[in-house]
Image (cartoon, rainbow, N blue to C red; front, side):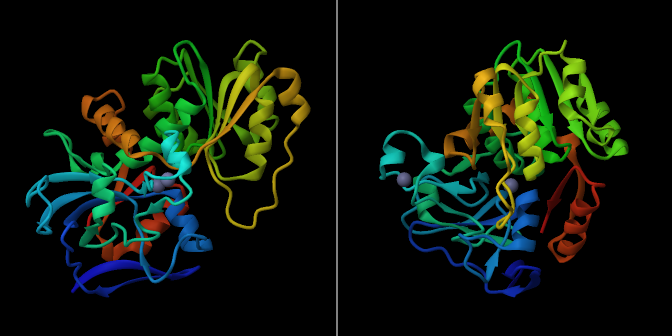
Length: 347
Ligand SMILES: [Zn+2]
Ligand SMILES: [Zn+2]
């Protein structure tokens, strides 16, 4: 038996003994070395998720070490250090054929259709391996850093869709881990200025120092669009990334964009949230492009891990708390309190 954090229903996640996973002929079993927590885990733990069938081991930001492989597995062996994707596409539908893997209608996910990484061991299904969903971790990159490749992959997918490029003034709304990763990646992609808006002044000051922001805006001082105009010569930001799952933030994001700006709605809203009211006339006259984004493809994961390994997007300093799986509740509390930036479970 092994310890795992399993979701039963909204508000009910139990750390308990479950049977060790046994690999089928095409599967691999890893010893989980780091599985990072993210806002989505908290959202799922509190509200549930339409694609998740309980009981289910949570955790989708996964890095570990291969301990056993099925008889048909030839490319992986015990001892290999690996990072595992969260979402994986079917590879056969119209969306997949067109290369739009993140919106594959038959996509499945670790921690939703298959048990995830908040456990001592995890089965990597043959389908994940076939989809290119397991990446070797380069020497010199730790498991905890590698486990941040999955959230960075989602951030990378969003910034590609929003076309973040050289010379852009980028506004990120949200000082959580996703906001920090967005800020670091925007810088790596050549943003001329990185501006971040947050709610808690103490946290904002800490993030501003850590990320070396060009400007930090506290939303509690009111009129976000006015404050953004104040630090962008009255133009607004070329790219606005709503990195918070809040309807109000989605509404405000659009009003902070410069003419011809791009707005990325990165943070998904909890199930049941009344739809935000977006000023489409502002979108119309400013010729804005609004993009949605959800998850990441296997190739995004590969490239995100390479960005981390190369030092182009540093992540080690974002990991402020590490817990064993037995302290899952404390890990969740560290996220909820706003004290942590990134939290990992190291079972
Ligand atoms: Zn995540
Ligand atoms: Zn598909």
